[in-house]
Image (tube, rainbow, N blue to C red; front, side, top):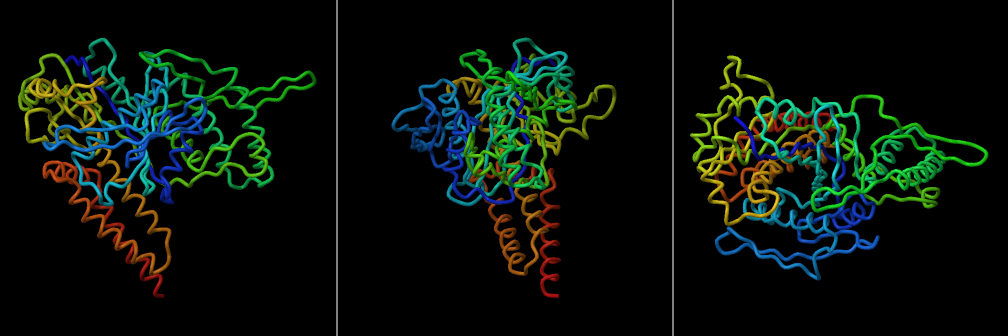
Length: 479
């Protein structure tokens, strides 16, 4: 099997202990900090920077009568800046996929912010990986970091694909270039991670760190052209150094441990946590330092793999399975199973009823495989960057990840609470969540697909554990 065209969305999920109460304010803060090139709020508002000022547009979206198309109007206008404009239209298309596939107006899935960071460049032994991070922050506190990676120009064997891309979490990167705002926010978050620091020292230290960071980034940020866009890039680690006529001071920030794709995701988690409430700078830090929203104890990551075009692609899902079953099993498992190991243990049943693509969901990964028939049917809906072939399926992956991590968050909240009233509230939330998850879509196939996926991820066991913890808290409160 030779792969021609594909995408991987390495998706990492975690949560904040507190909900995000004002999505628009948070979106403005994240854009103003420079961390997000653009931020979309699910009700139809988009924020970006224009001449160093945060500006906005409203987007009115409505499905067509057949639910196969959507009309939208942007007021007053879309961004002039190239990448924020691209981020807006990607967000609109993904929102179209959500409105079409999932019930609207309820509490599941919750309202959210979708933010786009600039390009990141990760260098390993064999490849330079171009990564485009997308962050989705739900008002419930759940956060997804999706690291989007596209196929190179050359064809690739499945063995190389698995080793170099599906198993990217095993790769160490010798150099990592990121948007300078990610370096700045991430380092501020790291500096604030030690809660034992004296408040006065925190203010002074934050001020000095911010000053050195700004100087470093001013001297060490470069602009690179990538496709149609220009991106600012800086090293994620490096030495901050100030020179003067009489003295030299420096802060060491070298990377000493191996850096992985998971480290990039957790750096983004931290950068968001310090930017949500506004990332202060300069003398204002001497009055009040930045604050970090508390992240939960759990985070998880898995790849969502979209195979678009490959040699000997069949017209039907069954035809693809007959030809490439072992290859699909290798992608889903992340190991070479063609030496005689039975692929059946790695290949779940196809969750799609039609012959446009196959959908395979396991605990470790999901795999979406297009057929020739499906590609032909989608030609009339074609948009740049394969969005018509990726976004609908990836929006299902997002709901899958959201439902799982929402339960992890609820478990920690119940474990941390002591009162009987809090336990009753948690029980009510759990019952309501079970009902709404079973009614997530008007399409039975999508609901069944998600329920099957949540079962794979252990959501049913989490629900039982939450119920048991609620009982324990109620007993403790009555003693």
